[in-house]
Image (cartoon, rainbow, N blue to C red; front, side):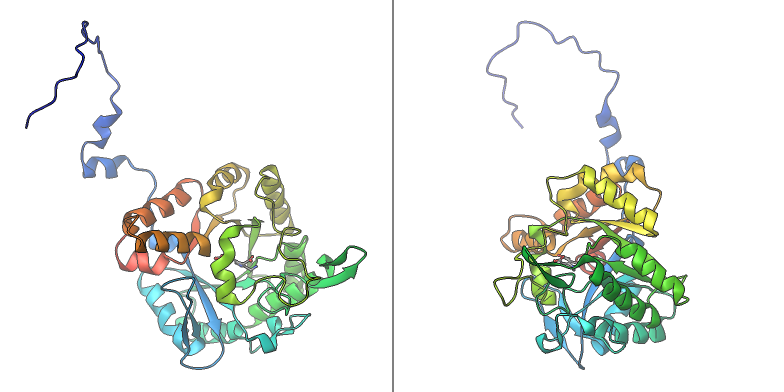
Length: 351
Ligand code: PBG
């Protein structure tokens, strides 16, 4: 091998006395592994699943390549697959047809909703081997697609925060009755953790935990999820607010994240979530020293779709990019990660 000489010769000798050489600890794969401090394990993942009614249903979601909605019978083998990979927890999202949606989102707390049927079936199949979590939010059940109920005001239709709490609490209660270990409110109404805790305790479900989506930003990265769950806001009338910015957080705010997290902890949350993950690693890192509760990060649908699109275009090595991104979420301070990549990444040995 011929080495190119530098074009210009220095007329002095470098006076190097390097005693500190960080590269020593990067000298081999074994050495790097020895000193690395962030490792992903299967139990770090919470696997998300979309559940629909019916039988034999496997509905691929165009915006989320590789992810499908499953009817309860088809979901069970998927939960088994997750369990066999070492995953300990799943979070279930219900999806109902437009005809079952209403202004009051009654289908959300129906004892025979897809999520509630899935909970009963999963409990029967897996006992307490799997931690069963559920998303608690009205957006997939309201005919207008908002996470809370709407009311008229002098400013037009607005979110009725306090009236929504009762509906969210009864949705959470129906999940507890169907066997959920943990309910996870993602609606961002003020006071919902306290409302849910009060109702669960009053009904004897003191053991059912709450994972609060405490720090949830109004994000452009939820698009594919809304296709998956049929939960885009502002369907129908032009009077209906077009976005979720009056309840989800403004991405220009950071101190508010700490306040939201503190409030939910005070209201009785057992775990806190930051969502999305990748554009909010700073928020995770800042929140980490504030709380001793487990922190969860949601690697959301748009983040997943971006990686899939980049990989399909040949712009990224998917395995390496996914490993790096998921590790960065843990490194930033998350104890647990919700990711659509969980099963695929573990199955293909990417982590
Ligand atoms: C429901 C909910 C959303 C997500 C999780 N729960 C959508 C939203 O707030 O519009 C997004 C998850 C994802 O994008 O993967 N409120």
